[in-house]
Image 1 (cartoon, helix red, strand yellow):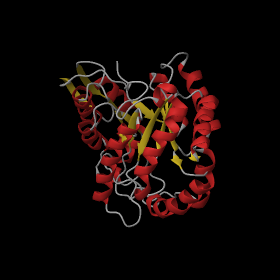
Image 2 (cartoon, helix red, strand yellow; image 1 turned 90 degrees about the horizontal axis):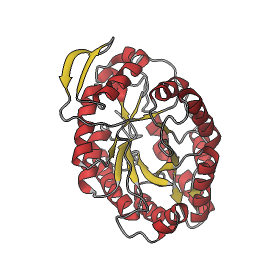
Image 3 (cartoon, helix red, strand yellow; image 1 turned 180 degrees about the horizontal axis):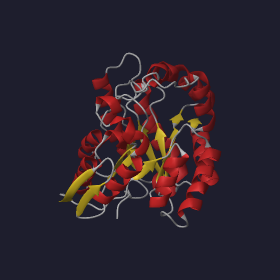
Image 4 (cartoon, helix red, strand yellow; image 1 turned 180 degrees about the vertical axis):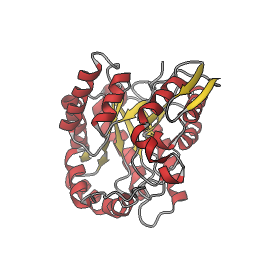
Length: 349
């Protein structure tokens, strides 16, 4: 098992965005000290759900503050980026970090950044496959050119060149099919349970053939929160998370005014606490291993911010001390600060 930390840069009531980003940098260092394999950073625009608008920029900062741990983006919103510009930055981080960086990308949604950043709804709706192929081309060789609907330019040399394989966030059958056709690993969200994750992975295998990617290449996110008792941990999240989620999720504003069904926050938090590793250390361990058994996943990343900024550092340290040794075995139990039971394995050639 590989276990990572998933950081949204969540802005809870009473915290400023700059303060949140500073805390996230501290939490990344703490995750390395606690023995996690990697940290994955989310990207959002114009909302308090997550106040990091450039996951790759924060990843660069994190790589400079750490020495062992892998750093990934979960995800860089490809619909808001030029694929070659993103590839250039990913290649830089790959070389500067000695291969510790993994690029995760996603389609995103019909949100305001498409208007503000100028990429537009057409590219979001029709251009994701073209953007993904161009990104992969820019990360697979020395030169790249484009002659598509959304990107057209002469052949250029990639400087620096790097051979990397992105991970693709999947929330739809269309995106899953694109990733499967290209043999790219999936990143599955925390909004679905083990049965849905297992079904998506079966569909992926059927579409891509066996073996499309190496064992353990797929990644899945889950809430991770440890307390003295399961009852207390659940109560703590149910008390803290709505204050962040309600205004945060309201920040998803569509470009074209299309209706968006509001999420029932109480039901969502109840779901998250019932299916994910939320509880005492034994229950957290049990749920992580149950997910691995039910889905075949061998790489989970735990969203650790659910209790609020005042609880996150303690949560990271307790997960590292009380849960990781049970999940990862004796090697993790004897690992010292800044070490882990296995070295990071970024998705690259």
